[in-house]
Image (cartoon, helix red, strand yellow):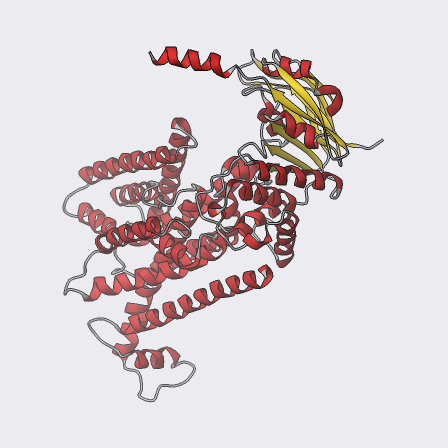
Length: 265
Length: 347
């Protein structure tokens, strides 16, 4: 039995005390394990992730974290054009005494983190000049430089093209297996959960949740309840491996064409 | 490749700092010779080194007096004030994630000015003036921060506007104090104090500005990497393990110490704290680890040169606050245009 590095018991959060984003939530995270958090906009995915990173206080229950947490934000708008290495070095904040600068060792660790994400070539470039996918990789490197055992990623692949989505997801898989980190990420893409997650948390309406292994939770029925539109799982052979893709059934094109025509007139 | 690239990048930043330090030293020594009683730079060096290596021609009492009693305190004062203000500005710009803030925009100077004029009105001794300047400089900063959190915490425009509001408020209080002051004696003292000058520099003033600038400045420099961390935003910094509120207040207090001490000894000297960090950023990049030391050097250099202009350009001295604004505003406009045109890769 592997020890939990994150233990959440009957956790609840509400901004106004009446509408709860989640309530009575129990959750465990283990090293080497990836948790995907799925839910519609405004359901509290990011809130939960922030509570796990101690950026928000719970209104009820507790979150016990056994190790330092690396938090990878979805977006990062720095006001000064720091170099990529300067940004990654910031991940060392917990390891550098308050009145000191990072040492050579800290710089070496930051470089290692850049190597691990394949971004070492960009070390001296301005962070602001990078593409969205590259920025995401650098922010992951920053979390790695902190030598955290837990990595929380807020929609890490949402704003990226397909190739970059694959890069980020592959890196997450590597970090969980090779570096033995505990990962949790929020996403709007059920296919991302299928691709990398071991466990999935669905945040349904009225603070109901479904938590379990990915193949048990990701059923058409659950996802339809989650998003409120029809969803189909398509099974197909890719090489010798059976793959599953989750396809949302969007409104029919002709139906929507008529409705926009009407609104135009 | 990267290891080498980083090494060379760091070395080039180091070289820029060493060059700046040499220029500062050279200008400071040359400035000792500049003035109504001209002394060539070679002779200045001879006089300075006299205690170690006796000069070939004996040093006259006039030379001794001009250099050690008149000009040295003045140049030291200009250097302390310039370095302190530039460092304070660089720290504030980092903490507020906004390259447009400076000690003056944030209302610290106005608050300190009110404290100083109040001290003159109440006939407090010079130590009292330093004290009231300090307290009101800090108080102004607290008001700006409070007002900004009240209006819109994440809005940079709201922050600058909060600074304008608090500056205006203390500006009105300064006017009120001037209105209440007697016109024969206290009002002229206030007006000349506010215009800013190093003309009355003496050893006492060096003792007043030296320790706050050296101690608070030293601590700010020690915190320069932490200012990098604060400059990426509160939530991000918190996620990285930084205790944002405590660190921010520590830095703001140190900044207020420097600005209040500077205003107390030499009045309001605007634009240095805003312009110099921009020059430093263009020269050496945005990383506060090198940008803040560069600001210290450039700030001292900048005010020594401006003070040279102030005391040599015309027969009567031009108040410093007027010159820094006259020179600072066009310089800032040019810098702003440069940084915008440069696509923002640097500063």
